[in-house]
Structures are given as C-alpha cells and as structure tokens.
Image 1 (cartoon, rainbow, N blue to C red):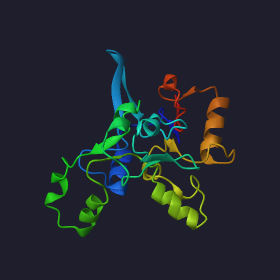
Image 2: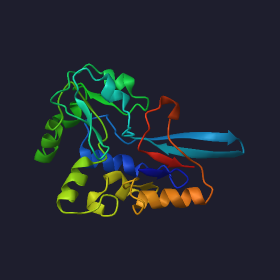
Image 3: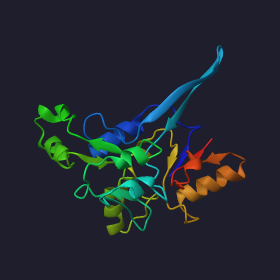
Image 4: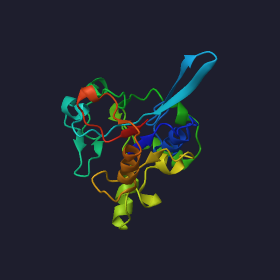
Amino acid sequence: MVIDIAKCIGCDACTVACKVENKSPGTIFYAPVLQTEVGKYPRTRRIFLPILCMHCEDPPCMKACPSKAIYRRPDGLVLVDETKCCGARACVIACPYNAMHFFDGDNRWVYDNVESEFDRMAFNKYKFMAAQKCTFCSHRIDNALEKKLRPGVDRDATPACVITCPAECRIFGDLEDESSPASQYLKKAIEGGREVFKLREAARTNPSVIYVK
C-alpha cells in the first residue's frame, strides 16, 4: 500500500470503513489516523498520519509469537491464526507500529444489547484472549482472486479503507508489478522529486506500506 499523506484530510473515513468491514470488537481499531499540530502561531497547520499493520517482510510479531499463530502468506500478507493463539501478547509488545491488538473480552459491552443477528455473528467471529490485526481485508482479496479480479485494480479486490478514502490518498496493489496502481503512483512520485519513506525503518522490518510526503 502507498499512502500519500499530503492528500490525507483526517476525516477518519478509512477508520470507520475498516471498523464496519471487519467488525473489530469495541475499542479496537485497525486503521486509526494520528494527528498533530506543527509550527508556531500564527503559522501552524495540522498533519495526519494514517497507520495500520505494515505487513512487514520480516515481521517481529511473527518471530515473537510462542505458539506460531502468526504467519506470512506467499503474497506478503501477515495474518493471525486465532485458533493457535495462546494469549501471550508477545506480538503486541514486539510490534514497533502498535498494530497488534488483543481481544480480552473487555469490549463485549458494545454487543451486549444488540438485536441484530449480523452484529452477534460479527462479535462471535473473534476469539476471546487472542490477538488480531489489520489483514489488508484479505477476505476481499481472496474472494476477488477466485473471480480472477486484480487486487488494487478492481474495487472488490481492494481493502475497504482504500475504496472509502474520499481524498484517494491510499493506493493498493502489487508493488512488484510495475503496471499496478501502487507501483505507478510510487514511480510518478519519485520522478516528481517527492520524498518516500517507511515508518521506523531503523527497526529493519521492511514494511509493505510506503508513505509519500
């Protein structure tokens, strides 16, 4: 994923879209947008930084997990097998991006009084005392691939946060494919002299999320 932070307006549409799509329990949000004010009055401005799981090439969460519940797929997605999770929370501590979350049941109040069968099913999809995280909406990608759709090109094969962003600051696709939207956008940004970076590169995790200043 490529994120152009110059376009981000801090509307939190991505955060809400992710919450609706994945039904993460209670106060767990996979795609928050951090914000801060920079400068000195009267020349100040607010900047926004969307964050999520970086789907690292060398994920520290996977190395820290004692039950081998975290794995990296051939396509680069880093996922959690909740059935194997032993609740050690080592992954939460190991992640340098605060992208790992632990569902301890404290957020059940959100679903206690719902009458919707859909909400009850959504709540039951997560295991108590287990880790969870952003999956790049792997279920959308997998379903789309069965239909021979192209992730990052077809909306049905794209994460919910990407297709919801009104500023179109998120671009998704195969960075190893020069013809993908993400590769094309990144190439144009670099050729235009814009700075690109990855968060906390000193951690040497080689994230799959690239930011454009």
